[in-house]
Image 1 (cartoon, one colour):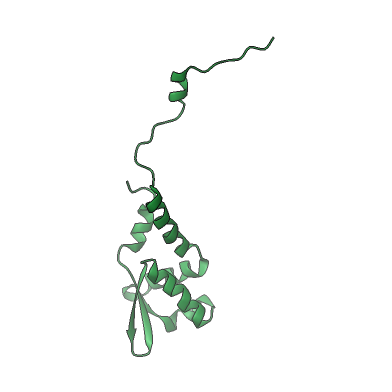
Image 2: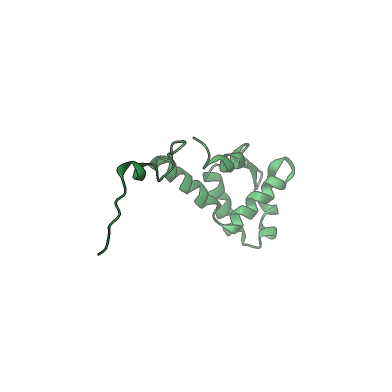
Length: 116
C-alpha cells in the first residue's frame, strides 16, 4: 500500500522567497535586450574599450580600424551600432569622424539589472 503525502497550502506559500523589488517589465526587458545586443560582439566591446581608454575618451575612426583588424566599413558599422545604443557620440572634423564615450553610459550597464 502506497501512502501519498499532501503538502498543506501554507507550506507551498513559503517555499519560495518573496520578491524584494519589482522585476523587469516587458518594455524595460526589450530596452535592456537591445542595449545588451549592442554589446554582444567582441569587436564592439573592443572598440568601446579603445575609445574609453583614449585621451578624453574620444578616438578618430582612423585610429580604430588597425587595432581591431577589421575593414573600415565593418568598423563603421560597429561604431554606428554603439552610437545608436547610446554608448558613443559621433562628430565630424574635416573628413574624419570622431567617436566619444557618452558620460555614464558604462555606469548604466552596471546598473541595468540592479535598478528598481
